[in-house]
Length: 63
Image (tube, rainbow, N blue to C red; front, side, top):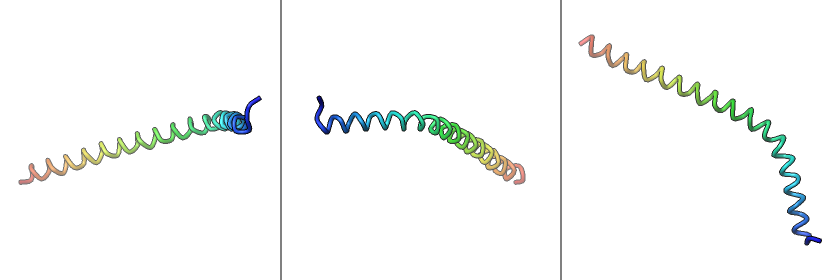
């Protein structure tokens, strides 16, 4: 038989495995949300970059 520490570790592994299974579903959802946020940020950055370059070109054209 294992020591008390070993038994506690096994119990922890068991619990964390169960938590991980339920967490996996949550994590999957979080990952999707994060991916969407990152994608939106990237799109916003591209739009801002275009807006800045448009301003830049407009300044040159107006001169």
